[in-house]
View 1 (cartoon, one colour):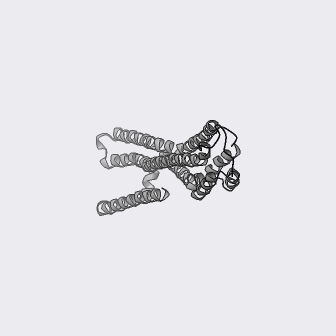
View 2 (cartoon, helix red, strand yellow):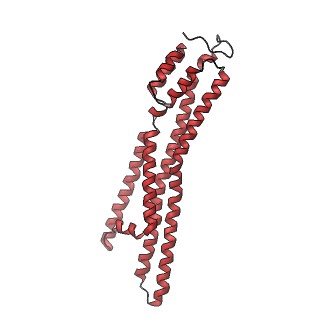
View 3 (spheres, helix red, strand yellow):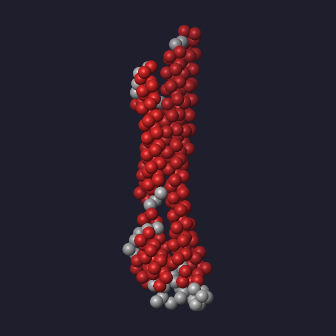
Length: 247
């Protein structure tokens, strides 16, 4: 999943760079190159706020990339070890192995190993609550990306409206003697904030849905791994409401 996300980002960046380079070439043939830094600065305070929002979005994306990983939730090696120990009914070993990892699976496995005296129904409810809390917590930490994706276009639209008001004021002051190039420059200044807002919002929204889907998949993997850990409760030879003796 991480590799697919990196490929997805690479494709987006490549497309943007290609489009920008193509646009610059065409503009250079007719009216010269565009100083994008100067155009962004023309957006004024709104453009600066958008850049700060975009920087915050990048920080959230990098934080999610560091946290929402397989080894933080369901490490494959740990899952294999715990499954083998669960098949043997060695819950002392499960508790020992779970202390060697700080992942969510290790935390749940340690909880299961420490509460083998509980009936299956009660323990199952406790484990389900732990998984649900983990999923909700990680979704909440991903939510700022949705906020960035939502407010960026709105800030861009606000900057555009402010710029259009300034443009029409210039037209009203200059009257019939006004130069169309002045109006065009003002409109271009107004539209740059909308462009910045969309450039920030699109990757932020894509990242939000990517990490949200990844968290949901980790929740499903945790449920499957816990089902294997609690399989001894479902053995035919086990006493109802009690944990079978560890071997």
